[in-house]
Each structure stands twice: as C-alpha cells, then as structure tokens.
Image 1 (cartoon, rainbow, N blue to C red):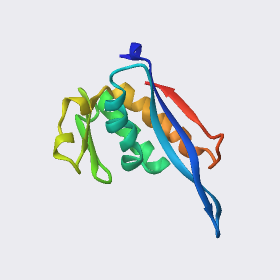
Image 2: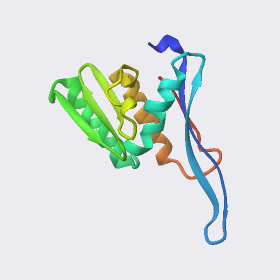
Image 3: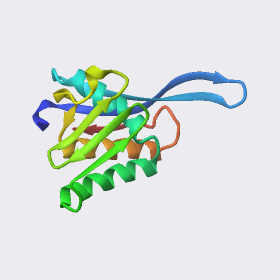
Image 4: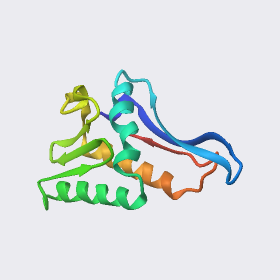
Length: 141
C-alpha cells in the first residue's frame, strides 16, 4: 500500500482577523500524492480525524485502541466522534461517516491499522504545535 505515495499534510490557513483575539488560524488536513485513492483518503481519513480525535488525549485513546487490537488484548473497539465512528479490529479500521448512508460500512472506508496509526500520530504531532503558519506536519501513509 505504501507504494501509492500518499501523504497527509496538516497545517494552518488564514482565518482572518478577530478584533478581540487577533489572527485566527484554521486547521486544515489534506491528502497529497499521485494516487487514484486520494479522494477516498481525503473523505474518510483526513476529513474525519478532527471529528474522531479533536484533542491530544483523544488521539492517545485511538492509538491505545489500535495497540490493544494489534497486540490481541482486545478484539474490537468502536470509537464514536461527531457524526463519525471508527470500528477498529484486526482487519483494519472501518470509518463510517454517519451523515450520509452512502458513507457507512463502505469498502472505501476501510483502512489498514498502520495507515490509521500513522495518520493519528501525525495529527497528534500537529495538535502539539503552536498555532502558526509554519506549523506543518506531513506523514506518508
């Protein structure tokens, strides 16, 4: 799978100026690469990261679930987020976007455990950085 040359890039864009707090930064997550799979990765993986793991603690929880499944300690976890859920088991991570029935239990929503672990670790690293235009994390999936 890694031969597909797909990267997840997390960065901030200009959200304008707020009279009370100054510069507003907006978090962005995009998939870059040269694969036909990019739209699938964007919709299911990149777009749902902040919904399933909006905080560093949430990232740690998801990573812990993946570790427990990989080690055989637990058979399956269902992690629920805002309008999404991730079902984590030995066969991978099924990402369901519950606002659209066409995006639930779909084969294109299934990802390898390692891909998801790399993406969540990248997102977590990004969340640890300060809000600034030069805060950028890129990980190869």
